[in-house]
Length: 194
Image (cartoon, rainbow, N blue to C red):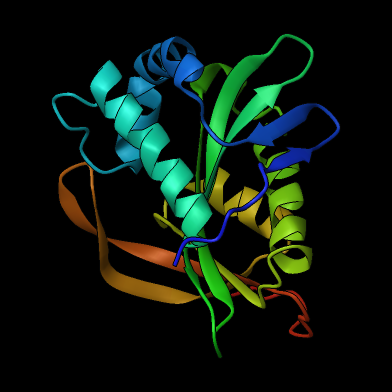
């Protein structure tokens, strides 16, 4: 049963995080195309129609259905000063019952990397997950050599938990990933492993 949910708007110092809209297509396709070489080493292989309007329309419909069903929360990062699309954060695979957990994935456009936007967005999304969604555990994973991604996870309260062998197909190959988790009540302290 789908529950009617209110539109989500998460405000940070510099950004508004919200569900994707049909009117975002040009900005999204342009940013993804411009950032292709920057993003491809860290992502699954793009389909032939990845940047098409039809594929984007399907993304918008999926985002609305997933949010309404409580299974995911896909958010675009919009800079308030000029309404630029910067990237996205998706809270996915939301699990209820005894788990109360979810997985977070994210990407940032090349022109906006290493300016603190993703850390700012993740802090707000994590707070939303723990307070509004009432989750207990948030998981994220990245390639071991992705120092920027590991750094943003560690800056936002994630702790290293281990390595998952052949975790995801990235850039056409099964790749190991380092696993991180952020817990609502975390008493583990800093972990130096990994």
